[in-house]
Length: 508
Image 1 (cartoon, rainbow, N blue to C red):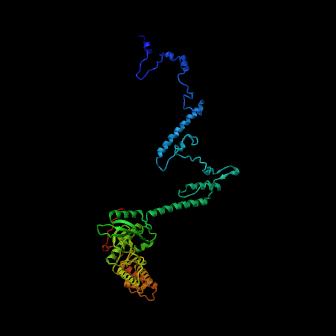
Image 2 (spheres, helix red, strand yellow):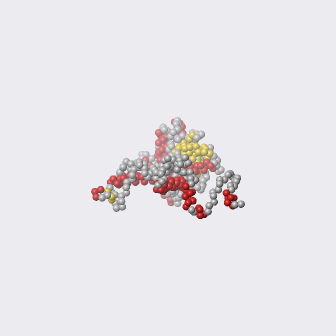
Image 3 (cartoon, rainbow, N blue to C red):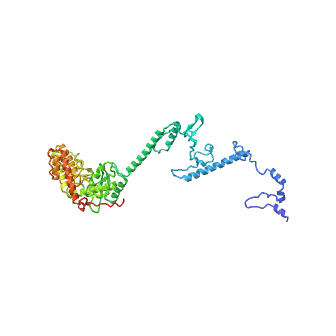
């Protein structure tokens, strides 16, 4: 059989009918120019210029006959794809960070030329050509002047310096509102700019100091984070059930009401108060005179550490209350001392504190009874407890269950204090003045009350206060010399002051 006839036969295919195979040709025929012209003349492919065949071609398509136009179109398409990739990289690099880095300077297509991109794709803003933004003043050349002849302008020119100072205001802190000075062509002199700059720095330092002071000090009806943490620990430990709110504020402390919990060493009352001593000395700057000369705490006093002074102040009130409780003087019971927080029993009933002696309305007989009780309390405090209240007045005495209760004894000192008798004389003046104004005829004068409480017999004479104070100062001087001769300059607080446990300062 002829092999050429076999090649011409069509073979059946399982995928369908197969067209006739192309005639076989030799390599010489393939390389011939005549065959090339024949293939070129054959209309084997439909014309691409036919609109019916190319539906994607529009009438507005640009002319691509020019090689320059075609190259520009290809370059524009490449730049757009590069910018899209750049946006994706920028978005991936920044993520959700508040501080972002822009690749705007590396863009290839100007935003005004990139008209085909939709608004959703553009996630940046070009502020380089903002038509509403004022131009910043041009910098002076390094030679120090610009222009020639009569039009020369130096760096000391008033208008130039004014505009530069206005532009420098943009460097101020964000909280300083400088306004649109450039848009108004504002010119600031050097003196005004320097004053504004100094004021801006001063306000920044003051704001930082106020913030730090607020974070590290107790304020009116508020506590700092350290104190708040100590209060939370007491609640978590079960010493307190909950803290209800602020009862009163003073120059040295803030008092909160709380419901008592349980304590291993001793029972906790149902209602207690938390006396939080203020960790700032701004309102009570002279408190060191009550403690640095007290022989019980003289060695432990440090003027350079205010927080330790406050803790020592709280510890001093705890020991004074323990002495008074042992002597039978009506006063709060101490439950716990934790750094500068003192937990005491609540004087009152059902969340209502007992009224102060200055606020309670008493009859004449009850007022006389109150005076006799105060007189006895002062004598017992001085003679049995060896203490001087040092701030006794109608503000620090409560009326509860028909009795006078003494509070606020953190500043109380011993009679051996260099100013102990002076403090006692001041207390006598406050008590005598109050009861005399309330119409108590039995109220003694300040001089007789001082002699009655101390047991001394200082001659009153013509009741000259200067002479009386001279005698008191002389007694204090002799008392101090006597103590120093006996070597009793300092002594520790004995265990007989006793009382509640002191929590260790483990979280300092």
